[in-house]
Image (cartoon, rainbow, N blue to C red):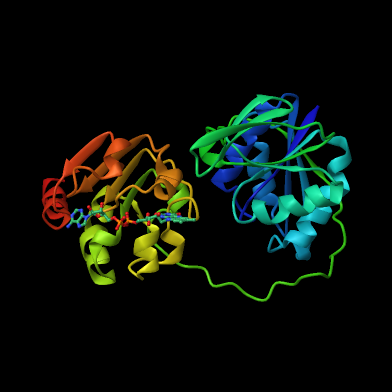
Length: 310
Ligand code: FAD
């Protein structure tokens, strides 16, 4: 039994989601291999070989792997899949784009968004916005899995000494091509990797207030900014800041929810945070049900006081 983790990387380094996926793979039993497919991504392959618990890195180089196009990535995974019992992808935008293609090509069921490995063929995954946990057993010969990264600790990025095997890549599928990208630039930590998140809700009332009130607090704490869907829909915060069932799933060390009611769809994205602080003027707000520290107060008074105290 050997598992293959499909690495996410920026050609120079390995993205954190890969480390959580390695942990999930190691719990499936047997050896863990990592596929690094990219263009001039030797540094990323080198970094993957240092991950604790990884036995082998498969490195594939080609210009058509430069942008992680799902059609090419799926073809590459299929080309080497026959020796693996488990194929694991982080449940990120990229992993969720590639894994279903691989599962379909192998004619097996995908096991999505796992949060726990019970046995090599049995996994746990949240359903109904995290209100219930399904235990899923797969009889397929190959398990194609996406991993909810917040469910697993990150493997240590150093300490490993895996061999690197360079294999020739499959040809360009020709089904898609890379046109361009517009990447949002921010000095703040990336939401899903941040240790601290300051998140705002509808109560902020406007885009100006959202930034004026929350940014100084985030600056003080070195935090990423997040938002409820109501705040995003109202245009107070950009789409990629949304936390929740239809946004990002986060589990930082500290999550500060400000003017957020705590609807189940929001909780689904943040309730696994290590420490939750809520500021809300309604003492009955459901967010207080999951908060470790709750402050029943008007945020427009409480947040500046908090910043001054910090
Ligand atoms: P509200 O529910 O309006 O809460 C505002 C809160 O601010 C209230 O609790 C109020 O007491 C408090 N408040 C008001 N003024 C102040 C003040 N001055 N000081 C302090 N507190 C104050 N939501 C998400 O967040 N993420 C998702 O991914 C998501 N996905 C969804 C998917 C589906 C299919 C559906 C149906 C809904 C989804 N929602 C999601 C929406 C969710 O149901 C809620 O509508 C949303 O989370 C509410 O956002 P909010 O807490 O900012 O707003």
